Length: 217
Image 1 (cartoon, rainbow, N blue to C red):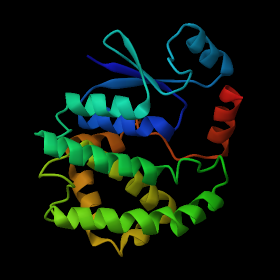
Image 2: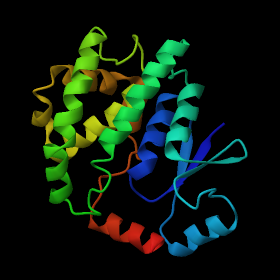
Image 3: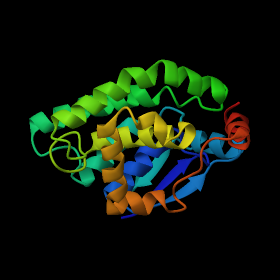
Image 4: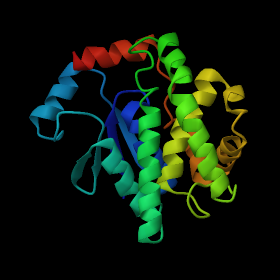
């Protein structure tokens, strides 16, 4: 059954949900919230449990909270591990990617260059060596846990794609395992299909930032 994702016309907190649905081969369409009235109507109708986006309509349910949705769809696609030990490792590594990704989430909302400068000075030196080590420890096979795609990989992919696009691939050169990881991810049929489709939204710009602010404030 296909899903419908409701969010702004950008990546933001919905991107990890898109990646999870794409990797799990769950078809989805998107409805973009561009006006305050749309948002307020959804809240009034009780579709947004915590009054926030993103929201996914799936099998008669209104799903919210991006991390929970990503886990749910990842489980549908068998991307959360084959045993309890793997599940725990994947969840820990995934949560780490959420902390890492948070350094880039304000891009445009708290400035463009300012956010990138801060991420380069703080988050990247902290997290990239850790994930480079994890990938090496797992046998340099392009995955963080086991020998197949997991939710943890999707979480790291989101951040690494952001770094590649906003700062350039040269920022990844000190981390060869991460570079190999990125190649492995891009070679995945479902991920490649998603990244090259219209479902993948463009990076934040002034128009997007203003549109989001207009909806929320």
